[in-house]
Image (cartoon, rainbow, N blue to C red; front, side, top):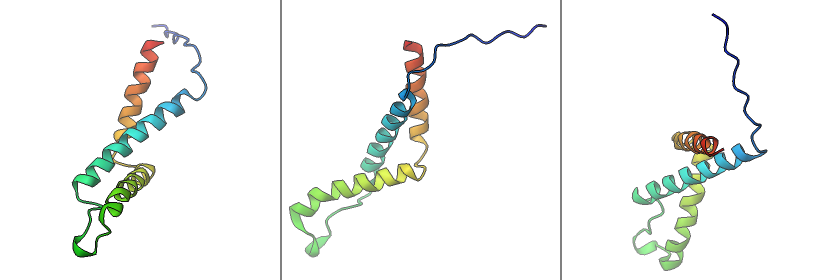
Length: 93
């Protein structure tokens, strides 16, 4: 049986995959940040807490921790999101 030649597809716009991957990683970092918040990371501790200021800046700390978690490999959510975004972008042409 003869081989079927692959369908030629137009080249992808430069940087499109990088933008999709960055968006997927930001979504995973946001998800992880919320998970850390639910776990109590950055919660003000009793009498030695810094008050409202500490509470406000705790969200920045959680976001930075979540971003570093994603850079270290995360939980794999970014990869699934990237593939879904890429598939959708390819389908739209």
